[in-house]
Image (tube, rainbow, N blue to C red; front, side, top):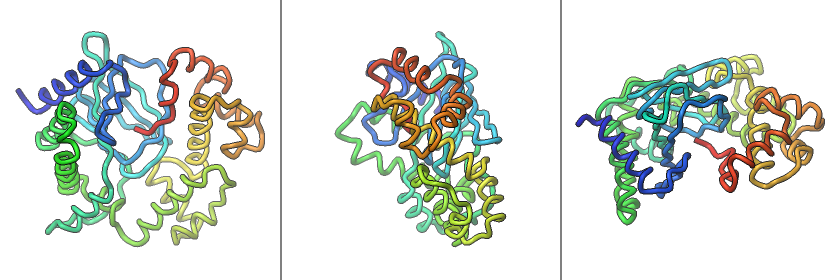
Length: 306
């Protein structure tokens, strides 16, 4: 049995041991299992830095105008927290889409990087990319999933698995991308800091000049480098974050559409409604009502990051 087959077996057993729901937020913090058939519409979420492994099936994800497709034996790696839309395009009752999402421990990534004798040199490739999984990384993922059978072993053994994942990623062909996000140059760190400021202050008016000052770049250079990294403009990034949070508020906290609009920073409910419908396909109230009827008590998971 190859490593991919071992991982598929571990994922299926984990779902069988649970209640079968997806997303399956496991007992390991940051380890999420996904199972689904082909989806009719994209799912909008906030992606945290993570290794998103396709165990079976095909999926695509867009970040702004950049689209990534990844299939069985491949993974999408996200190195900066940013909003995106994903859709499963291959999966069915007999062979459902299966995925393992492993959120990356950035503190450990920095520690591993500093310990490497041959450190990768940061480069300017986009913050999200697709890679082929090798046997070593697939083995790490399978060991992580199998640890779910031994809850007492998780705090002792999982850190070692995460450390190996960090090393394998940094030592691999895309190590320079992760190196830029983890350590990088001073300019890289300040650009990521500006993205984090925008993420944390999404409900406030956007001033590109202020973000550019945080990054140490001119407004024009900041705008260009921001889009190179995330695939979208600062304004589009903020808009998606606002709409994702508004949807979470309506579903998890049962607030009205108008209240959600004001809480995420919109001054005009009509503008909020237009932009919400453009992103999610339905007006806010109808979308929330439809989702709550379908999702029931799992609605609180909406807006969670993967």
